[in-house]
Amino acid sequence: MNSNNSPEVIQALWADTQAAGFSMPSEPQTCSLLRTLAASKTGGSFLELGSGTGLSTAWLLDGMDTTSTLTTVDNDASLLNILQHHLGHDSRLHVVCADGDEFLRQQLGQAYDFVFADTWSGKYRLLDEALALVKPGGMYVIDDMLPQPNWPDGHAEKVDALIQTLHGLPNWHVTQLDWASGVVIAVKA
Image (cartoon, rainbow, N blue to C red; front, top):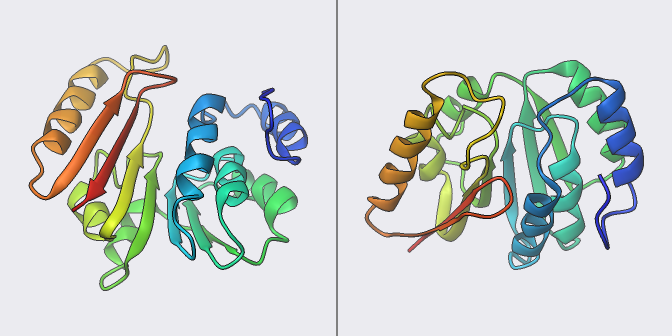
């Protein structure tokens, strides 16, 4: 994973990701976009659903200012150990090892400026709950909306239905990018 101007920690994080055999990391172009979008939310409250080993987490942190905070959630402790090893020193970061669905159900009354849903929770399951967490003017971002070699049978129909649902949301501005792994950015009006 080489990218111009990538965060310093990326090479070591990528090496540990490969050594762990994690085969679903976020795409470098998507990560770069996440950093750019994060930079637009000064003093922002960020939520990442699906931390993996922390590659996208590192890019989000790199774009955030010093007063922003990021909560990242994953249910795989071994992957979160890699993330903690490389990023755990950052005081802006709160790492949660939990089932994403359960986490979302417990967020009643919480609000975030930016939600990146990179797992089934908050994307294909509990979408309404994830969208409800986004503050007015906040962003909801998802990726992997273009065909991927690891998609199971029938997944393309789920993707199409999700994109159609997002485009039909009242009071949201939605843009679908047929770029990188396929990114959708939605902003709550």
